[in-house]
Image 1: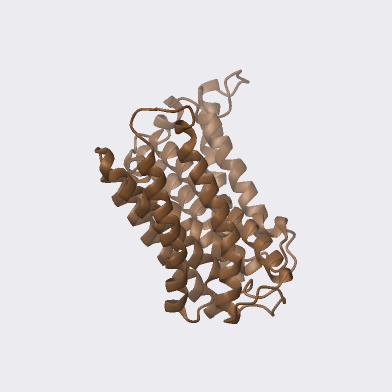
Image 2: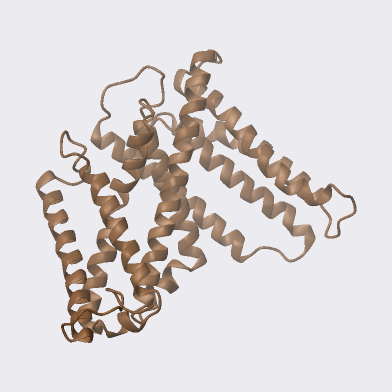
Length: 337
């Protein structure tokens, strides 16, 4: 991975990068499954909560440590080292949760768990650069320049993962609400299920970490944010194209009778403009096409998106024209909220 060393390497090998992405996403998916099991089987008795908290802490620390320090080499050794760090944090979490009673006995009891959560995050943030250097060099020698490099890279990479999760959650919420307006609740039920939310959130976070690691040698905030929109553009594509196809079946009448339809459609159009602009940029260089899509197919996809937008806008204009009998009308262009 590109952040394994403070020396900026050449462009990463595409096949190798995809392999790293797959491993990190697989770890994230497993992490999400563990969260889902713990969430659905959270103990009612106080005696079981410390153990459950320890398992959650161990899973989180192990997954994050491996994802940040993964280089594709000596994976078993990395897992063993990360497990030791995770075990210490898990035992501490178990002890902290054990000290918290069901009834607040002291004024500071209510703040123990949030304080421990913040402390564990800081400890893991401090320890991870040491693990990265040790795993990469194999020596117990930690130059300050390397620690400085990894600590800042990890901050931006972690922020990248958070942005990925936030944007995906926003897209899925918009996707579910869009189809709910025309009476299709299938996507809302799927996207709101605990299993989907846990697995999708941790998987996309892992993918965000992988994408951030590939671009962390330049630490360019603009490129990092644009990478989020470029990577999640297929999600927006699928949402728009499926919605237009669904309109051919349901008709536009449910759309106009739904509340806040104009706000939702305007949000979709704004997102489409933002995502397409982020993907195309200024048209120069290779950034105009996502790495997983050939340039000519990317152009076809842009045209398909544009056609979908025109169909949606055209149907809305014709509907407004029919309601107004060809005369100016004070009603909104897209339905009445």
